[in-house]
Amino acid sequence: MRADRCTASSSISSFPELPFRGEHCDCVVSHNVLECLVDPSALLRDVARVLRPGGRAVLGHTDFESIVVAVESRDLTRRVLQTYADLPVLYEHMAAADPWMGRKLAGLVRRSPLSLESVRAFTTVHAELSEARSARLDEVMTAVRRSAERGLGSVTVSEVDEWQEQLCTARAAGEFFFAETAFVVVASKP
Image (tube, rainbow, N blue to C red; front, side, top):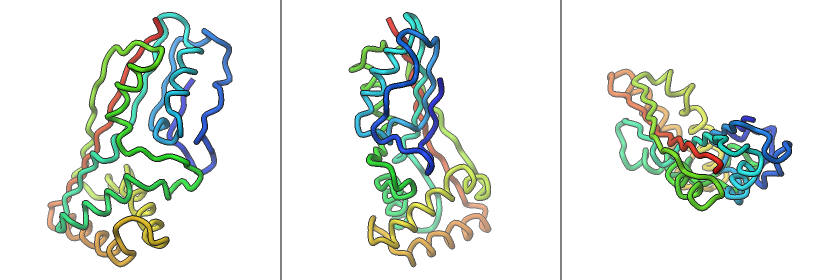
């Protein structure tokens, strides 16, 4: 069973029971889902229910406050990225958005019926704006622009435009840099 990041076509703020009988699965994989849930521990309890003894869960999540972008204005970049991390505006159906979910995974697993086996960090780095745009920055800009249009967050629409110009300026100068870190937890059912 695999659960992927929330999409505009699905509403998973309160995750229903997984459609499997107890002790049915050898492995469950979830990436960038737990932040979307009002009660992420409920999903972990259900994962434990559907795993066979000795089965594994691989849980990954980007830590959205770990996003790093190198452009001219530090202050504006901080405010843009904080707005993105804090507000679930891109996916309007989300009842929750926890930018620290990546760093919370291990603790959530420790408090669940699962046994924590390992925690690893994986950092994605892009030195090209086009790669970063397709990886995350288009999503960041869409979400932050929607926030600004609604008067949410800490940037205005004109500041979003200014930040987009700074991205292009950094690219032209060869100074553009983007990185984000995801944490992956492997857990097992005793």
